[in-house]
Amino acid sequence: MVPGLKVPLSRELAGQLLLALLIPIGGEIYSQLRSAPFEGPTESLLVLLGFGVPSLYLAICLLHRGTTFRVRSKAGGLGAHVLTLPWREGRTMGQLMVSAMVMAIGLYCSHREPRIAAILLATGGSAGLAAAIAFDHPRVRFAHPYPANRWLADAPTLARTSATTPDAFSYSETGFTAPSLGISETAAWTAIDSIIAFKQDCFGVDRIWIELQLGPTQFSFSDETPGYMSFMITAEQHLPNFNSNWFSAVALPAFETNLTTVFERRSA
Image (cartoon, rainbow, N blue to C red; front, side, top):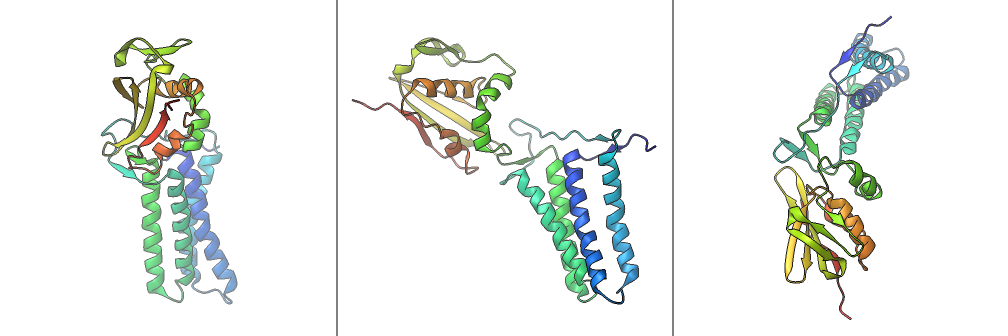
């Protein structure tokens, strides 16, 4: 029986690496089957061992119930990230697959064009290694890891469950209050003249800001304000002509201000 194993990778990355390793193995087997007699059997054996042993190890780890994988977590908060990549993490996994394909092509060319094969192997291996490190590294951030359309669909649940501090807003039939934001008396929904949303680039993280115009008074809050999304969901239920696609418009593309009018009261 295989004893408990500890793997310094997340389960997600281990699965993707296993698929990536199988690509050059399959490419080498295909290359040898097409050659008669076999070309470079010693080199092929080294290739199969070099990719086969890690893939076998990962397969055992994924199948063995006693395996302990690294808990994959990304650091949060301003200044917690050392690198922000302007794409989603799914693209990084795609990069890992493409890198494996490049290496497979390099192995196929190794018997005919050694220089080209060396370039392809070095390029594919370097890109794959960078993708694997970025995927699991806690201080490497991806832009919008949570798709905007799914965010909007799950927003009511997230608004109820994600807050770790009391909601900054309280509601009544006619309006709302937010003492921590300076609104201690009830502000009527009908008193809101406009709502504007935009994104601020904070050198590594994006912060969404909401600005409300209440007659001569203007106040703002960000996505770090407890209950900010529940406020927007509640406001949409009370305000006509509310832009329900505001989050997508503000969130994408990344690192842009994306100033968006969420609501503007129309005069009669």
